[in-house]
Image 1 (tube, rainbow, N blue to C red):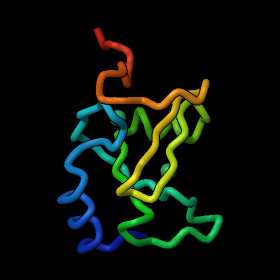
Image 2 (image 1 turned 30 degrees about the horizontal axis):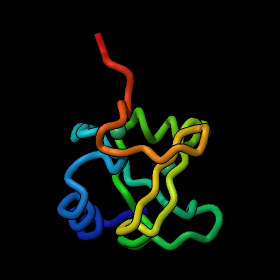
Image 3 (image 1 turned 120 degrees about the horizontal axis):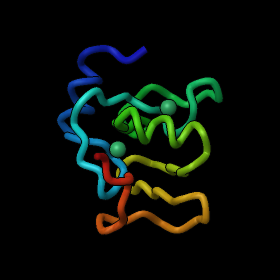
Amino acid sequence: VINRRLRRALEYRDRCCAVPGCSATAGLHAHHLRHWEDGGPTDLDNLVLLCPYHHRAHHRGTITITGPADRLVVTDRAGRPLTNRSLARPPTT
Ligand SMILES: [Zn+2]
Ligand SMILES: [Zn+2]
């Protein structure tokens, strides 16, 4: 469970979805880089904000997100790192 102070600090740091090239700001989820079930701590270094689309993609295995949060590496299924110029999400109609 993320308390309000941590959530605010996280929103202040990340501002938008942590996936490069994605600037979604609405409905962001706090994601544990080391999954909470695996003993990942609930602190800023282990949390990133993800939009619902990328959060789902990560948990489905479509993208891989590796921390710590200040050196985040996001790769696609083929292991290619996503950059700001990547098309992080398909165009919506
Ligand atoms: Zn998650
Ligand atoms: Zn996103």
